[in-house]
Amino acid sequence: MEWKIKLEASTGLGEATTYEVGVLRRDLGDLTSDSVGLSLAEAKALLAELQQRIVQTQIDEYIVCARVCKDCMKLRPLRDQRTRTLQTLFGTVRVAAPRVRVCSCLDTLGMGDLSFSPLASVLPDRCTGELRLLHADLGARHSFREAARLLKTFVPCSPPNHVSVRNRLHRVANAIEGGEAAPTLTPTEAGHRRTDDAEIVVMIDGAHIRAVPGHQSRRLDVTVGKVETAGRPPRRFALAPMGAEQPAQAIRAALIEQGWRLGRPVTVISDGEPALPNLVCAAKGGPVSHILDWWHISMRVRHIEQALAGIYALRPTYPAGLDYVSTDVERLGHLIWNGYAAEAGEALWALTHLASEAIYLNGEHIGPAVRRFLLHCQELRAYLANNESALIDFGTRYRAGQPISSSRAEGMVDEIANTRMAKRQRMRWSRRGAHRVATVRAAALNGRLEGWVSTRPAA
Ligand SMILES: [Zn+2]
Image (tube, rainbow, N blue to C red):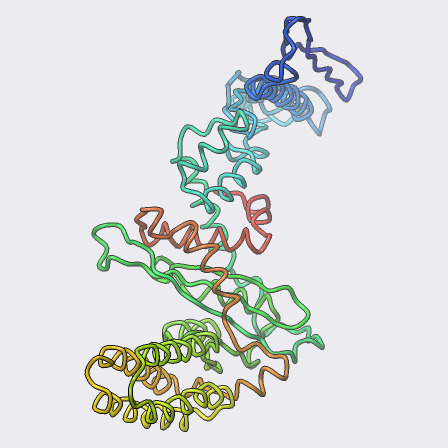
């Protein structure tokens, strides 16, 4: 059996032309699950041929229209034939792209040599927007090699290699960065909305990735986060601060988009790394209210509880002193939750003394377990002391329905830093490279990558 696949093109003038796109053959007796219907290879070949025909007829028609002189309505003569390469999702297409002479009706000065290329202005880039979008999107999720391999598996597009995926992602990232830096939205802009009274919360978190050799440190920081406010979907951001020209700019753009204006307060929730709230201060150009992430505190309290259980598991002969410790550990979480951080610090100090005495009472066999417990207590005490100003009455804030944790930003660490950039991928990152991938991935997660690709073509 044989199928002829044909394409019928009808021009604006009503002329129809038929092109043969391909032929498909199958033996009638040979119907198996492998031979039924189109194979991937056949589909890719057909798509490539179809694309070549469609693009060429589309361009031919466009050039005929572009040749018409708007002054005398005559067809301007062709100067020469050139070919132009266009990379598309369905193959690299070579098209005839002639240059057109300036019309003689305008050429009063006898400049007969003037000509122009009608395609240069409409197709400035040698790549379609859709292909650029997919290169950027897949390149921000997978390694550049894997992105190129995935695309080549399913469509006849032919990026020469992973380098073109990387270069296109870089150009998209530069467009995003340039757009976010552009003062299209000024913070003083009017247009107050009712929701402008709602709290603006920045949940921010960080991760470390491996840096390329030669970088001053073996690790690079990646910062991710979300800006949330009532009545608007959250807006995500991601950056590699060392690789960004203006690290605070992505956060500032996200703040402005969420309705932040000069003078409006901003709350930051983070795990206590001072660089993170400082970055938001820089974005805002002023101080922020910083809240220590409740989840990180509760994990540290949990570690103390587990270490205490570890001491009990050794069945100490004289557990009386430990029972006092146990009562204080139970209070600990409640004290911090309700904003009594100073009291929590005192409780920690008291219970470390009681726990130390337990070694003298029960002997050195519980020593290592007690010391592990003391270490966790010291760490929590230092953590609370270092972040004193970021400790609040979590209970009241929680009951008011306001966020107390940056755990939603941690999901972004997984999305961006861990899946694409983590150590297990064995990748080493340059500062700019890491920043660009983070920028593009955040734009994709915000559902706005397409806007950056189609409305701002790379120069
Ligand atoms: Zn003319």
